[in-house]
Amino acid sequence: MKNNKNKTRISIEGFQTEQEKFWAGKFGDEYITRNQEKTYLANNIVLLGKIIARTNRVDSVIEFGANIGINLLAIKQLIPEVELSAIEINEKAIDELNKLEQIKVYHQSALEFIPDYRRDFVLSKGFLIHVNPDKLSKAYDLLYKTSCRYICLAEYYSPTPVEVNYRGYQDKLFKRDFAGEMLERFNNLQLVDYGFIYHRDNQFPQDDINWFLLEKTDRT
Ligand SMILES: C[S@@+](CC[C@H](N)C(=O)[O-])C[C@H]1O[C@@H](n2cnc3c(N)ncnc32)[C@H](O)[C@@H]1O
Image 1 (cartoon, protein in one colour):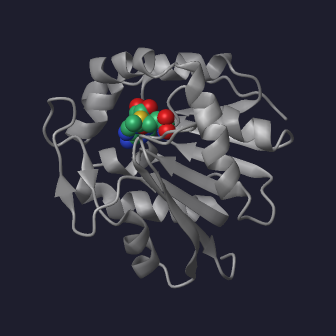
Image 2 (cartoon, protein in one colour):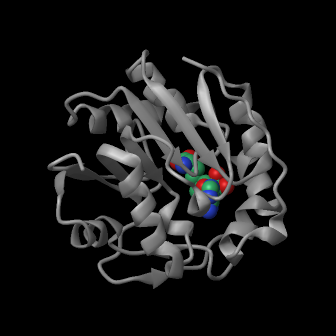
């Protein structure tokens, strides 16, 4: 697999939404230091192992909003030969991603991503919840276009859209039925499985995440 360590300087002012500027800036930098605990890798191996067990075959994976690549590293443990790609807006996270072996790195807003080729498994974990709701249809289209088979959403669920305070910030965290909206939007998507991981799980907690595995029925 080819290593792609591209590093482009991007200006925060160039982003269209407050939410993108927020993650590209100081808050995003600080998030990285808060999220380096070793237990995160084990917890994600357990979560993603459960999800990937519901698939048939996954040879390539791309994550939207990959941060420092913990989910991708977890997937690499589960599928050693997998081809991995990461899209990430924060430069400090990109520095960490670039240190990892064999990950194709895209330093840009995922909302500006131009799908170059399709991957078997497209992951959004804690990404859609931070997208400006006006840009969600664009995000859904990009997740869909980038996948040739599976789309996995691991986000915070709410049956009706709500905005919640995020570490003291307004308009930075949104909960809704992301998977349901994608199923409504694309006729050939079907629900394969879904689940919830409680923050008080005795062994492998997650931050009260609801995950949904969707599959294209005709691979278009
Ligand atoms: C809550 S973190 C989740 C990180 C990782 N997916 C995980 O599960 O640990 C959100 C990540 O998405 C990135 N992000 C937010 N908006 C983005 C955008 N428009 N394009 C690319 N990355 C974005 C942030 O910089 C951050 O790394």
